[in-house]
Image 1 (cartoon, one colour):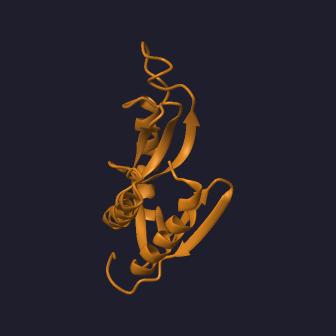
Image 2 (image 1 turned 120 degrees about the vertical axis):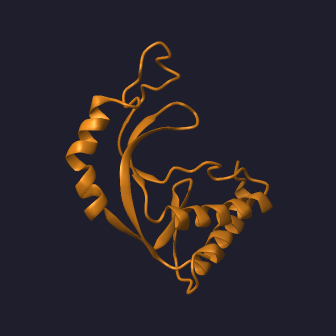
Length: 150
């Protein structure tokens, strides 16, 4: 848990990391199902393909900063995505039946068939900043490095 006296140190660490990375393109690859760690939400997401390595390198640097502050890793096994739908029905709330968005489903297959090809062709996003939300405050840090992926 982030302590109040660690907030500024965390923001400074994120700013330093953002200064090392240059902006990059990412592209969506597929639809997927994700569940939060607390098992309170299940999400239908669009997962990143191109740009995954850059996002992973960025998260690993953040994890190093977190470790120095004795904080847990941001995500030990990240799945970079954009959530497009969610439900409170999860593996914890319905252990005897398949919860919504359980893989594989006709819904995921239909989404892939209908939108998958254009998603991979046109689904490019530009990653140019890191946002940090602590409580109600949001800080934004531009990726401004001139070298590779940090």
